[in-house]
Length: 311
Length: 282
Image (cartoon, rainbow over the protein chains, first blue to last red):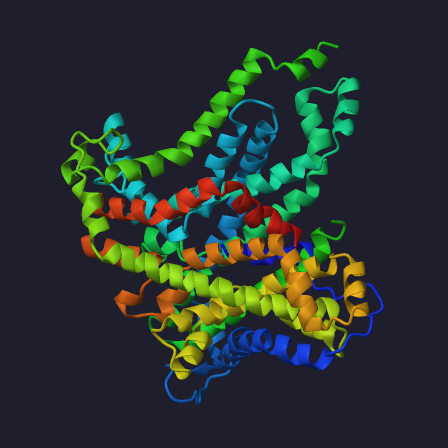
């Protein structure tokens, strides 16, 4: 759910405050600063900035979290990380989630959004239903799908029984598990992307579509050559959310597979949890944090600069 | 030029295509949810033989045992307390900070605002280990505050940005009029800015509340007494305990997501706007 926070970066970015007007003189400037700023400043520094700095520091040590870190190992944590098969798998999976989002989730969201743009009865109900999985907690969605995939009691068992084939245990199969997880991700998040596109479609100028129609464009042509190009900024925003969501995916994986079987469904954050937190390898875990941080920062600045220049 | 008619009145074929496609997707969304809720009414054997169908015997005790037990309510209360405190502190701290950025000119204001915006760029997970160590050293481990304070801190960047943009768009004349009348900053904040900011307070509250209500990784790391667990943690423990007794797990899942579903349908307009448009427009 925290992918919303990134939205602001995508659309707003880091801009200094623009002073809109000459400040009229008012009394009590010092008291307001002394009273109003410290709570936020203190909390933010203590629990966001300092931990991030400490992660960079700890990542250079081998440390179990007790006492002070003394065993300096340089960049060894990072070399260990990049030679670790599970971490490579996690990186691949994070990439795969982004690819699936591009190839499946966003087209699905656009398709549904255009269908819901028609004035037919029941549009509101459909919109609600499609958005519903997004408001559910990842943990609950994960458990529900764990049941769906269950080979003994779940829906998959019944479906397999209906077709008379052997029950697949998809979540226990190291080749299939990741695809099962990907399906749940699409199920959970397509509604959110659909909402973005519904908002995007509402901003499309109807007169352009009418002009295309008068020129004899078919429905598909209108979509392909008018609507889709005008949705460009929404597509870029949607992709941005998908990437951010992929990078922090954790809650959904834990109830489904916990990263298994044999690390085939790890993501960066589940890797951090499994190897860093549960084993109290502070150095290694912090190194994952630093890698994640670098990717996020690069993305926040890079993606915006390259793809969202004109938005 | 038959197009004009199809534009006004769709052909039956188009209509059919729309409804069939939409219903298909709706079914894919709803079937797992409905079977979960129905599964909670079944016996294990019933679940095994017909996970899709209606229960052959409605086993109400799956649900009533949970509802009359203490566990479910305790988890809901824990989640509610954590979420309400998180929302309250986030709104207070960010509205005050955002007010100074929007209305008070002071040295370093721009840099300080950018400092807060750093918080938008990375998820909690990146700093989770140092955060754990900090909370431990502060003696807040295994307390609600160990979850609440980091949640507030990580929500600040986004909330301050939303509040600041909103405050800055309030009509400037209000500000000048108030000052001519000798109103100070703090009174202006309390009597003018805040009462006019209800929509943005609602947006920030909804986003913060939903995030906190659903949050899993922070409580997972900070809490270790089961009586303090919010529901996403509790549900995982429950599932671990009852393992393959899926009918109980399903009933428990249904009851835990029920408040979310009810509130969502009651306040859908605000929630959808809060979670999508609100975030995007910021």
